[in-house]
Amino acid sequence: MPSGLPADTRMGAVALTVRDLEAMATFYERVVGLKVLARDGARINLGAPDATQPLVELHGAPDAPKAGRVAGLFHLAVLLPERADLGLAVRRVIEQGWRLSGASDHFVSEAIYLRDPEGNGIEIYRDYPKADWPMVGEEIQIGTEAMDMEGVLAAAGDTVVPPDVPAGTVMGHVHLSIGDLEAVEHFYREVVGFDRIITIPGQASFLSAGGYHHHLGMNTWAGTGLTAPPLGVAGLRSFEIVVPSGDERTALLERAGAAGALAEETAVGVMLRDPAGLTALLPN
Image 1 (cartoon, rainbow, N blue to C red):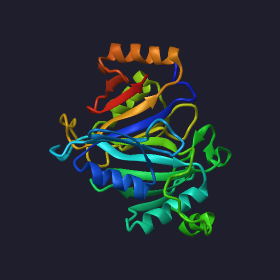
Image 2: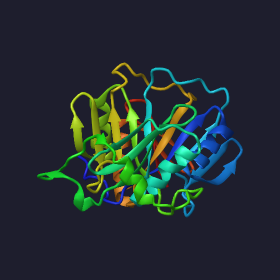
Image 3: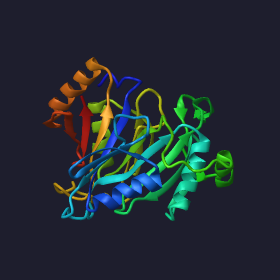
Image 4: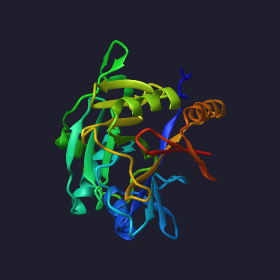
């Protein structure tokens, strides 16, 4: 059994392979509100205006095949500091002429949902104060009901919508679409070291470190027949799990090596391949 991940473990950049690099970058700038941090050939990094590390990496590949029924990204989830910021995010989406695909209250957070021009799912959310998260014993209760859109918009007041998300915006969690819940959950619990927060048997599981409501979600709602994505397919390329502790990171890598999950060591970190064929990057 793993000793668990450090409480300050967090999610980092989500890397996407995209067919139209400029159109996608424009979307993440204007609709989501991320700022271009760097451009390097066919790669564009975007993040919060105060950040040096990106939240989204776009890798242009015009000939990338479109994903079929394969495992991949359900959504990336951008976490904003305050409720007023979420209200401004709603207005930004509307002002840019984009359409929301949902808006929910999850009891621990309020969230809006949309899709980028190539169909990748995006959640933009804000957390309720942790003291207000509903608990039954020691278990966090996560659910879904309609978000109070009027209240969220009112929280933003008459503030002019800024071009960028606020300082302090981070990648709150990543949610995967997979075909084998048991195998993938086992990997991220027993090999990586996340704790299970809640599970919907046979459908979905939510995992975290440090008592957060979830850093990593996974579901089989697209069906259990999903296969590993072919190399170079458009969509999810990798996602980062940032483990600050050197000792815990070393222990994680030892577990991953024993499980045969070490895919590649690169200049920026170590890639792990999960049972769904998806790539988690442990950055240096």
